[in-house]
Amino acid sequence: MSYPKQYWHLYRISLQHRQGYHWTPLPTAQTWLETTTFSANTLPEQLLQVFQGNQGEPYYQALAGLCLRCYVSQPILQSCQRLASLFSAQQNFSYQDLLPLVLHDDGQRLILIDEATDSNQVQLNEAAQLSPCQFQIFAVEILRSYGAQRENKLSLKNWAFLKTKQHPEIRAFLAEFGFQHLTDWALLNRARKSQFEQLVPADQCLLKAFHGVYRRDRRQQTKQRTKCQTPTEAQLLEMDAYCVDQGYPSRAPKLLLGDLHRLAEQLRQYDIWRSRESLETYDADSGDYAPRRDLPHESLDEGNLEQRELIQFLHNQLAIAFDESLQDNLKQKQQKLAKSKRYKPFADRYLQGLFLYYIEAQSLAEIAPQLGMSSWDQARRILNPGDLLNQVRRQTTEKLLAKLLDLAHQKGLTGPEPDPNYLSSLCQQLEQFVDQELFTEAAAEIRSGKNRRFDSAYAQKLKHYLTNATPN
Image (spheres, helix red, strand yellow):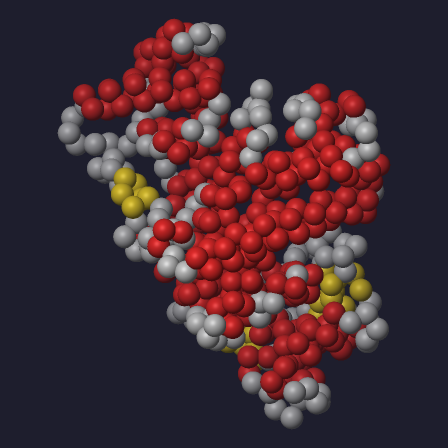
């Protein structure tokens, strides 16, 4: 029986082709697939059952996985093309620059999933022996994560599209072109009110000092703007004098310069984390900043939603998705620690550590000796509240997206396979919605340093869970 080429043709990077990729046939996948009797209508689901089955022959499992790797290579490519069309302002980069980050499967190896390995992937050689993969193939990771999140009800293609958009290296690359090409001084100079409000008082004072001195001097320069240069020693001394007047200790110019670099990095990370569709671009020649014209400016504004039913649906499903995601990630973190040879002793102390951090407001340095950890750095690696928040945020968004797509399909607004442009826009709007409701304030609390308070909705839910789950 013959099957569509998308199951035995793989999109691969190719330097020989102008578009940067080539749709390559894989005879091994084709030959095996043609010996099967799968239904063409439900082929992805049937291949997934074989690939993820625990009782099957590893060779056939790996072949089913190879067919699925071909299948998801197309949405991986499409996601890169879509992201480039949104984010490549002034043609700074193209989708071809994104492909090596995610479209690196050559289809030459048979791969299976093994959660016990660091990469979660093992290679099947010609002698039918399994060995851990030294390099993780993104397409296989898509299949693994899809199997673990089947309750989301996204199709495999939509899942691949979404996971490509969320890939850490893709996000880091886009952040470079959206923000990181700016110097530290340009970042500080253009800092916005929303960023200022996330800073602790000492850093707010330092940023005010920087703006007062640096912006004044730039206004006095010639009308032809240049790149923002490193502050002079005289400027640093004036900034320090302002901070001293506000009650903060004096710092030598070198130390103050280091604090400004640290503050700029904090703003940079803020921009990366809150990256949305309306990014700003910087013109080094003019020194001006303006919203990108090539990006959509829609936002999930409740005032523009005519149906109150939809508003209620969003809030109800957000509460459910958040609750499930929080509990899932706490359990997964404990399980991951329990499987780790190095950190296994701390698996049972993980929730206690979060209890001390969130409820008793102790620092990681204070928590470490109480839990038998060797240092603040080890406590940070094990507890890592910021990583927990990011994982909960990601999973909450995915769950809410699945529910919204399901509703749209039920109402006849979309088909089973939504248009990639629609899906990308919806993802961006949902991220903004969940951040406004839950995660922006929670992230600011973690960054706030000493004397932090955990009053956000995220923190309140987490504290409620920890109070019930942690023995007194």
